Each structure stands twice: as structure tokens, then as C-alpha cells.
Amino acid sequence: MVKFEDIKGFVFDLDGVIADTSVYHSKAWHQLADELGVAWSDDLAENLKGVGRMDSLNLILKTGGKENAYTEEEKEKYAAKKNTNYLSLLKNMNASAILPGISDFLKTLEEHDYRLSLASASKNSPLVLEQLGLAKYFEKRVDPTTLKHGKPDPEIFARGAEVLGYKPEECIGIEDAKVGVESINAAGETSVGIGDPKILHEADINFTDTTQLTLANIKAAMEVGEH
Ligand code: G6P
Ligand code: MG
Image (cartoon, rainbow, N blue to C red; front, side, top):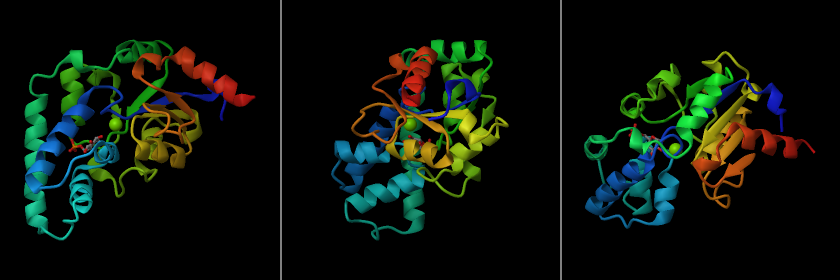
């Protein structure tokens, strides 16, 4: 692992790291899976984390053995329907959806002059950040519509470092999705996984929830990793 002192930037995932919105994504996909006659499961919900909109729909269809059941046009319609449902779930969302400890963590990072960027696959991330009142922390963002590949490809996290003007090894990436941790690692950044360590076992550092996500805990974990 690189040294804590060499870290200059933090590249954040959004859904499930900054805010509780992965629950809303899941709810909206679950609703659509029911409509498509595809059985919902915890595994499917886990595998959808971090996956872009159309890729998520394709994964749901594949899981139900329906990958060839719909035309591209029909699939566009279903993906749009999921998004409409997702947006209606977001309607009354405010700063109370920020996950515990995240506001303090962002403040601490700012006080210590770290640069922050956003590496979310969600096209709704500008809206979500606005509603949470956290847009000011993320002037630097990767626009997911400009990407060729989804997570676990390193592209999004590599760009997350690039927009900060830092090398990947000078950045820490933070993720709740297995594919997200893989993307961070493949980009050559230090990965922090938030969630079940069994699922996120590839992360350099693991915290079971966001209350543990502090600069002091990251420093301590990186110092242990050095020996
Ligand atoms: C994130 C979430 C996924 C979501 C994807 C696309 O990666 O973890 O659950 O499917 O973004 O989000 P969007 O808001 O563009 O449909
Ligand atoms: Mg996420």
C-alpha cells in the first residue's frame, strides 16, 4: 500500500457511500423486476450496485433468462420507467439521507486541503448532490455519459484522479460496490470498501459502515498495511 502522507485526493462513489440512495435504486429495480416476472433476490440487488442503468436492466433480464425477450426500444422504455420511479422516490429526499459520518468526513477533508471528485455511474448524481446540499464539495466530477466502460473497468476512477490533476497512486477511492472496488484497484488507487468485508474482500481497507470512515481510521489502516 502507498503511504498515507502521499495521498492528496479522494474519489467518491455516490449511491451507498455518500447517501442512502442505493436503497431507492434497489426499490425501483425490484418494482420493475416484478413487472418483468424476474425473481428478486439479495444477490441480484448486490450485483446491481454500481452498475449503470441499461447494464442493470440487461443484468436483470439475464438473471430471469429473458435476455432476448425485448427489443432495444422496449428496453429503453423499461429503463426510463425505472428512472421515473427512482426520481419519484427521490422527490422528498433531503440532507437527512446523507449517510452517518459523511458530512463530518467531507468537512475534515476540506479542512485538510484534500481535493475531492465524484466517480458515480449515475446520471442523476447532480440532482442528488443538490438535494443533499453537498454539491459544493464536488466541483470536480466524472460525467458518466462520457465513459466507454462501466465499473469494474478502471475508466471512471482513473478519470476521477485525472480531473483532480493527481496520479492514481495519490488518490483514495471509496466504494460500496464490489465492481466499484475492482475499478478503484484496477485504476491503481487505494481502495476503501464500505460494507460487508466478505463481499468487498478485494478492498485495501474495509469499513463495515460510514461511521468508521474517518481520516484517522484511514491513516491507521494504511500504517498497519505498511508493515
Ligand atoms: C450507480 C448506482 C446504480 C445505478 C447507476 C446508474 O452506480 O449504484 O444502482 O443503476 O448508478 O444510475 P442512474 O441514476 O443513471 O440510473
Ligand atoms: Mg455505490
